[in-house]
Length: 514
Image 1 (cartoon, one colour):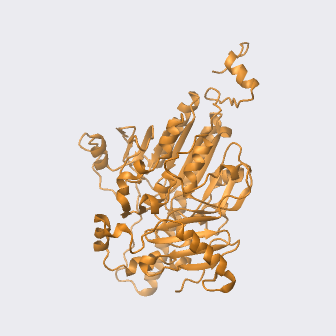
Image 2 (cartoon, rainbow, N blue to C red):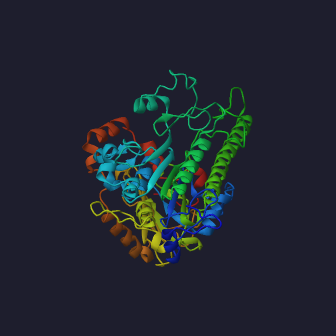
Image 3 (cartoon, rainbow, N blue to C red):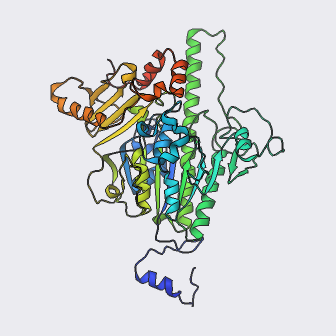
């Protein structure tokens, strides 16, 4: 309730003001509650080096993400699993894949596709039990249960789903009913998107761009909760910039979803090289355009929070699920697991970049602490809440962080990196580096058997021994129905190992020999 000129505040509001409780008056609504709000944004398939706040050459211009970093904290080193399904599972549960079983998109041990949110807790459900309203917009891709399932716990949703899945989940045949033209498109997440919002098909035209709709859905959700004085968490797994690299409303033609591959018939070697180079340049420009458009939409969320008068009482977190597709995704090397992570919000000290380490196991406990909700006692988080560090109550956060894809593990401390550890591929020792204060692979020194670094290497072995088995050859996954099927479908794993154990040739700044 907003007081009008010449009227007196109700007694309860007067008491709250005298107690010093936050009472932010928004242009669009009533005073915000004391409980903070949370906006969590997850980009799709993009490495940390593509965001301008990380200072890398060739990055996209991302002023709104830069603003979050400037007003809060930018972790120079955040790790996530190198592929989307396990990454999202870890983000939602705070439990590493060697305990949940979510290890790769095609490797779900222990029946975890179905049990992910019954054997572990979803932070959405825990926040709901603590009085929060929650919404998700975008791409789910996190086990067999959908966001609206009670075990997951989102109150509202606007997610990208194909017409067949929408029909299967909700009985809505968008094409047969005439709500949608039966177009055969290379993708349904960008132009002429296929979406379901709170159980209803979203009717769109060919000139509608999916991310716009999902951003608008979240802005509406934020406004409704703010006006009701209701604390909320808005989760936006964006789909951007996952391929195909579509045009955006700011760059390129409508419905130009996928850049066609050039026809090289009859061209000599020199001409082929020139044509392919131009194709790669255009693809990269579309990739950059998508990232910059995502940043623009994030700016709209920030502006909406400011209009509602809730910005200062809202945490904004931005991160990405794994490294850039083709050049980093599904690679058990640092670039595959190194993702952006920036956060700002009430009580967080604006300190810019930090050398402290974090990984996706920290997100669930951090969200609960932001909402002042007690952690569950029946399932232990593998991560640690970032909030004490973010608020300056402690100087250090984590000694080590952990990531993986399939049978390949990556571990990092502040000074050392162990990557490409994979007993299943015959590489139980992995590769060990002295990284020091460097990042992005520049100047990493190989020190596998160097006596001066033996104590550090021993510490890494101790860390790994303290973790559950991670798809070693005697892991029970291999004798399960799904494990046997995986082995049958992958009889020659040479090419898969070659990809997962090494950087892409364009991103090989340090020694990777065995």
